[in-house]
Image 1 (cartoon, helix red, strand yellow):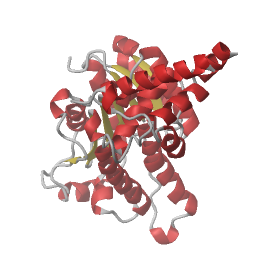
Image 2 (cartoon, rainbow over the protein chains, first blue to last red):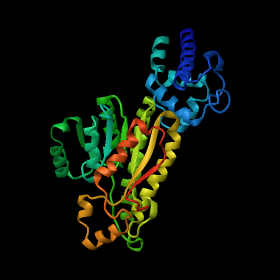
Image 3 (cartoon, rainbow over the protein chains, first blue to last red):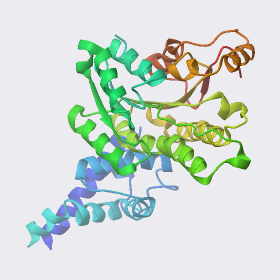
Length: 100
Length: 246
């Protein structure tokens, strides 16, 4: 359990950096992104076009597939949700191997 | 060599305007992936015409409106080259008829190849181009899609649809370094136009302010410009290459 939690925390940090880098968010640091808050609309002010870039970046980085808008909405609900999605669909297999 | 080592995918690229576009990109240093739907003899003739320049070309038989077939081709291209820079949607068919006599299949076939084919290929090109933050999509439309033409309601609907699709997609990806434009060739001297009756040709000529038909290279000039770095601020446009017809 401990391993899983620390892996998720690491992933949250990595995802924040990936989002900043992919969307070239100026004047935004990882500490400015609240992991539990919505990624789109409020907060960072990201829009659906930003989502296109994020989908491609996440798919490339973690070999997961976000096949439609519904899956995307769930995955991008927040950074925490995104980390859960990646752990479950992609690196999740490795994570469960590590925990098991 | 404006397009040295660029990867270009052209649907319907072995005859007429499509073949001229393929050859122009090759001459400018690109690697060209070309599709055709059925005519294997023409595909062989096209490859023969390319001569030594053909080594930078791969020719595939694929229906541009078939998502699975095109996905396999895109995956293959990305595996081989690692990127896709330019997409030209040129594949198209016509099944002319007056609406009152037009069958459902004449309607659906034309919509499927011309309109759905463009959607399928643009959709498949998006992820690689977004990943690169660079891409050029150029859709070939027609004056019929702008002005309408009797006997071509299906073709006009499809090409008009492609023009509107072009403008919408351009807005979706404008921030990401991808431009989406359309080129609308008027009456161009190809085997297809040469086969028209003399009277039709004369009437067509009369309707063109410049008084003569265009050449395939007139169209390739516009396509290659829109695909170039210099056209980065042009998106969502329909460029007519028609001697003033529209």
